[in-house]
Image (cartoon, rainbow, N blue to C red; front, top):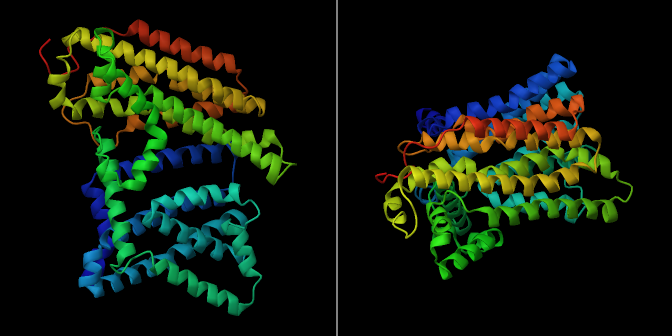
Length: 468
């Protein structure tokens, strides 16, 4: 029993040691508080709120449970200690049974009790478990409804088909689901070793990004290197162009790239083009080929949250990573500032901050224009939502400046301010419900930016650890 208790405690011990409890609590608060506010605003019944809240909590708990068991499922231990694999699989199946029952209860609170709900919950949990094991499955899973629109890939569609099948077929499918769930935990074979190495590379990449450190291309593996080049090639071209043309007038640009604190605009512009172009292409394909009778306005209205959150979180990525990048590169900064023509101390800090603000303004305009253009194809409320979201992200560059001026030591881990772009959903929802004109929201954002610029003071010290 002590060994089983240690297996169950492992995910929560890992989160507590890695300061993941606070990050999880903050993330849940950002999900549950707007959900509660929406339930109060719409006067939803208590059962609906309980069902939605329960589904959110169960999703987080199931993901954490599977992640903890997968981390304990090391290939060397699976081959040397077969008993550990049996304990891990038994623990996974026991947790799965509890979560299926709890998830079915939450869905029943929302939509009433139906025989298809247990199957739908079980299939969803199986997909989540395999996504924990192999994160690359997100890609085919996301593209399946668009590439093969007639395939019943949805868990609800599949559950309805299973419910109408004979009991013998349902029993066979239940056994197949249990077998596929147990295969999430490997037995130390070649596939398990490759999956474990892939998970280690992902963990190193995530940790390096949170600390603002660059990642070696060799550590990514051949597949990830090829995938990364599809998104980072504009930045690589910009970097090569600067290296071929070193001059005093672009010394600050080269210093910015060397610090990994700015100069990301070529890659961000390309990613923005992929998001908007890919999204519009998918919508056009859905409207023209899959469902010609689909209402474009309804599609744009349904996609407003994902479009705005994805685009503007991408816009604010340099702001969120800048304090960690400045802290993690302190050793190299003493050499980088020796570039000819680059000032030092407070003057260098002022010029860098001005450059970062100009880059943010240019990227904000570049991101806001296509997002507002797409939102204008929907209802008036969607345009109000997108304009308010855009206005909230404009002044965030001043928050980032305040953060990197206060940076000391090493800025790692999750901080509350890193969720600032996502908080734009709240005022955007209020603007949508009140049908605030787009020009009014944008004017408010510009006014707040101007007030911050008026109240801002020049830096008193250098951002870099060199004497001013």
